[in-house]
Image (cartoon, rainbow, N blue to C red):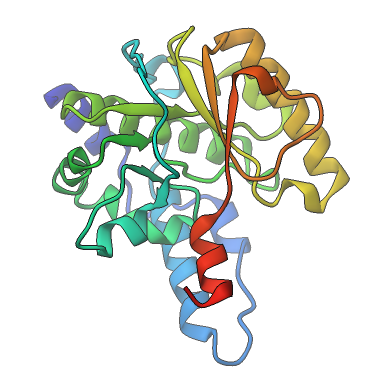
Length: 243
């Protein structure tokens, strides 16, 4: 645990914010100004972590088993605000909803032990980010997963990627033959996004040989449906339906 704490301390830099954070400004419409500013602050906080050690610092996650499938996962910000905690929690939402993990990491991650399963954090890796930004976000995702294991939480590793250059590090440290989680929300909006998603999916299968895939978001062509369980965005559906 102390090794991980020291690693987090080494990454923090309040002044070294990559160019991506400075140019990736939001243009909030009327009534959404504060939300837009929150997104900017969240992005800046994630970008405040530099990556001096690169891939050599990525820790390995211990192999784990899933004896049965979890109930539909709940977004972290919803799970944390509810008195009755759900069976499984995920981080497939904007970084601003869980960026606080970078400031109060140990206590907030310790709360997640109340969940039966935790799909590990998902700090963004957008294709328009710099290579360094995508790499250190991948590292942050891996560090959070290792930390959750150290605290005794039952995890399912969230596997994510961006452009093909991320394949060089995006799957490092993830145990083979275990269950994994993959998100496809928003991918169907653009042909390039779908192409990059399919490339990364094929590489994840080749590298990790998962026994089970928890799929969040719409089904995509060419998936291994025989080992996949699909979960929709139930929280969004309830909001749209008013219940």
